[in-house]
Image 1: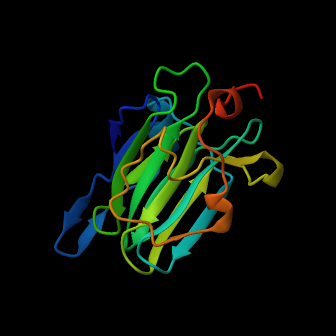
Image 2: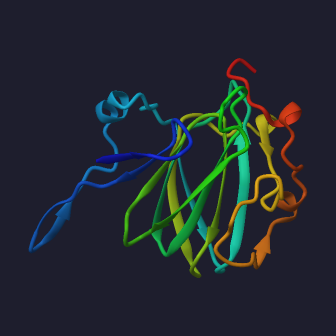
Length: 185
């Protein structure tokens, strides 16, 4: 695997290192030792599968508070998404900044989303499917979110949103007093 740091410390884009021949290729999507060598969480307790039927749908921006904060390893297996993270770590020099990348079934890139980051995505095609392991089980009482179109964050989505859930439309804007994630919360 090839680990490329993003501008937000601790977050990575990960590309498969393919070994191929005329039959196709083989590549590892995960290796606990390689993740640990890069200082990344290497234990996942749940694997989620999400299907988004319509192009232009936004899901996010979600996160969980400690002790249920989660690492996610996002991979698009059908179609394409614009995957976005926002740094919410208390005291981080990049607090409130975002990073986005296109993850597609063809490019097979993955986004490593550390604890303390809000995460969301926009489907770039109809019938987009993602699979992602997480390091902590879903805990509804710890779930939080940011508004996907908060002007203070200024995410540059690749197209106008066509669909956003009622829940995702009602998250609050960024406010360091309520959204800064402390590791010991």
